[in-house]
Image (cartoon, rainbow, N blue to C red):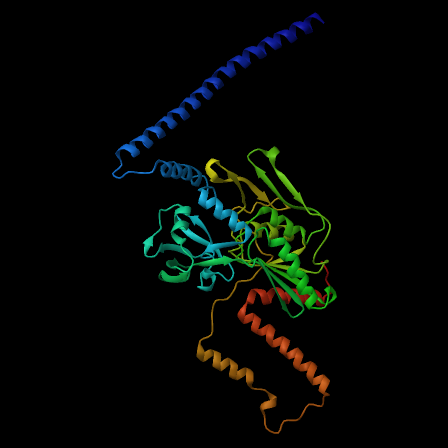
Length: 444
């Protein structure tokens, strides 16, 4: 027993000695790091004072400080930034769904301003701006080298004013100019349409209005078809949706899931991660769903597509999404400004990180760009017009008027489907999938 006590005391003494030996260098290193930080802050103060005193023109001290703060944040990643009081106020308006501007969501890629997506029925959308376009000049002046906020500021202006942006687009040999008239943009965040027996719901962004509008528009579509029994399925169109509020992405996913994880977020401290789960209730009542995505589908759109895909609640169709798998927290600062800081990555229910990878569709469907020229169009229409009915001496059909009417209605549906393939091939493909699932009696 005596030997055990000695051994324990000896071990304790050794532990104290080791702790002292290790803690000493660590403490010294920590003090050295602090000293280095203070030296850097002194350097910043020195540079700040020299600029104020010796720069060729008088400068506003607050502008210098704001620029330094923004530079510090934008050096972290493309989505962290400083929001001046004016920008913070504008962001609060954006989340409410009404604002002024061009109607494009942009990011920065290797110093270039890249269009994530144009928003539906906005000046940029109507002018033909596409996801993936690079903007190089604004009103003839290069924006290369500017921060993202500076470039966006160049594109802002009074409602009704004209702006000319120079665009570089993949597949185009030369840059080209696009003239856009700035306008007040009131987003229709959710729209619906009926195609055959399918309800197509288009979500253009995720703001405070998204979930209530989704519920409203989906109910309208179902009612128009005479009830859920007459619905083949639902297409959730998230193409060119740049994202928005994480809370809305969770609520939209939950609208079609009865249970299970929707998304998880993991930050610097693993203990501070969050998991968000679905609650009972499915707006689609188990009907099959196809989610449409493309390279302009980002952030919140990818959360919805990833959640429904992982739970096998929907078939994802289109092309690979943008790949923004990070979460930004907006933190109010003194003076009414704010800081947008990347605080976490998000993961789909299966544990996938979408950051820089995107959501891969279950079925890859490109949207064809080729359009028929006038000669080909005329030739195609001529071929389509020729039929047995055009031949002399043809036999009349031995059918009743009701049977003929039914055939004509079926033909009209088929022709509408064919036209949809010309107008929107990806959507037509999605509807074909739902028709196939319905024919097989599949109910997800």
